[in-house]
Amino acid sequence: MGAALALAQRGVGLTRPNPSVGCVLVKDGRVIGRGWTQPGGRPHAEAMALAQAGEAARGATAYVTLEPCAHASPRGPACADGLVAAGVARVVIAAGDPDPRTDGEGVARLRAAGIAVTEGVRAAEAEAGLAGFLTRLRLRRPHVTLKLAVSLDGAVAMASGQSQWITGERARAHAHLERARADMILVGRGTLAADAPRLDVRLAGLSARAPQKAVMSRQPVPGWRHLDSPAALAAVTDADLVLAEGGVGLAASLFAADLVDRLLLYRAPILIGGLGLPDIGLVDLAQAHGRWAAQPIVTLGADRLETYLRIR
Image (cartoon, rainbow, N blue to C red; front, side, top):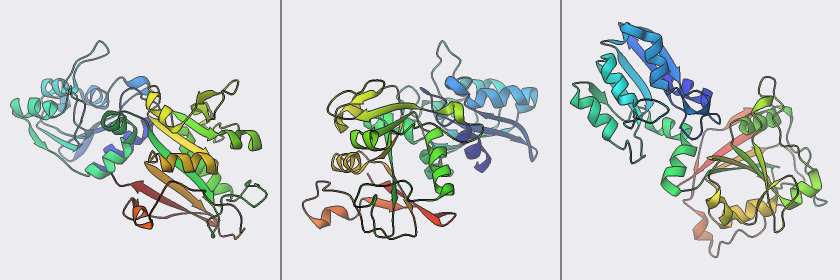
């Protein structure tokens, strides 16, 4: 399953409207097929892996990061039917698919064909990789990651407003990797005016993966997609993964609207005594507790990346 989860990461940001899924076929202790969702959503991971395996798929075990789909479409057949037709003996699934066209039906179809099914293997890791797809289905909006570069004292800029650069090159390179995985990058009007950010992906081999750019402001800005408030995110139907990059006004408004699903804090070992977040709408300190689950810390040169997931 670990190999399938790694394969699924290859398609993140490229497979809309379908989720990015990984599949590995194993027989007699040997991998006979690998697949991941291709750009644009087809072929699906299972179809790619079955095509590689061919007749050897009969009697094999399939490891899949998401419940195989149960609905056929003009773009391709149902993956549950494909696994049945290929004669696999067992299917191991990480996460269930909440899409009402599949929800439980994929598993039921496999079991009805006599295929052994194991569910929930490394489900939390799979759901993290499927965050955009799952948030779209469950909350009817994009999944929002907020990125902040902060100092040891929690400042996001100097008192003058200067914020380039708080973190070092490795942390900034990692932020570009996050851009490459997003469907849309969102900034506030103040950041746009102060920094004139390009919001492109400046990593070798990934420059073509620059997502669409949006600004949150009261008035439209020529050449930029316009969102007039955090509530406007609910109307964004062509982006499942949104990366919000700044500034403090945008961050505060997203926190106040409880729209941040994932928080990335790139913390630099410096003290600047500058500007932190303004009011985010809390009326009691007790409201701040129990909202965020800390993830493992990653070291990026001299900086540290702290990741927090919203507990819902």
